[in-house]
Length: 144
Length: 201
Image (cartoon, rainbow over all chains, first blue to last red; front, side, top):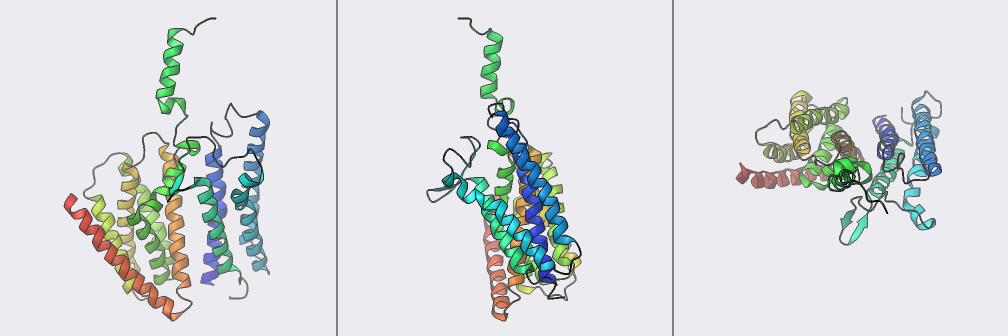
């Protein structure tokens, strides 16, 4: 029971923090209100934030509602989080002309000659925590 | 070709050399949120102490699983506010070093029969010390609100990492023993941090 609750708490943490951090990071003049951005690009950023915040609320409801199959909600939440955070790992390589960095002055983490954009670091942590949350809570409904 | 009026030229120059006005260098695209997120992660004393709080909370069990992290984060926010207001607190660095030592001893000796309230009080005191250090180190060029949000989230994530370690350690007896040994090593690192902090007093 304790393990399941911890797992669900971790999934909740990743859901809420992901939505809050993404909104806080994008709701400024470097992204959503950047005058240099094409209006349609700004529309897409607003669309992304609205989708992210809306689906986050739905996943929170799904994860915590009383259910006969709580393990399904746990798996669905973990898969949702992987769908949100894994694109950070490949979009830049997959689609030419895209960049993880909003501007040249974004501080980048450096480890022994390798550079790691901060949003990529956050995405990696989110993926790892999502997997940890799923592993801990995947037996939900079987361990009561 | 018309030249810009001197006042416009001066305003333009001022906007370039004053990051807060130009909004071009507010710690990158996030205005300090990422700086705040990374601050606990890249300070070894912060990192060890915050993961240890998560481990210790799982060892104490029951409602203490939530009480310890909540006490630490809440007191850290109070400490950060004091630091941001430049209120002088005596020896915060020593408090941070002692926190590593005491939390390590806690992991080494903890059991579910211990009264949690003195431990929660100590954890809150240590949280205030860590928060104070975050507060006084907030860069002038970033938003204090976003920076604070960043280090609160970073700290909570480290607590969760410690909780996962504490839970995984319950799977096998040798993992539980290994966790005690790790607690001893954390305490030793705390002694080294204290030794580093003492000459600065």
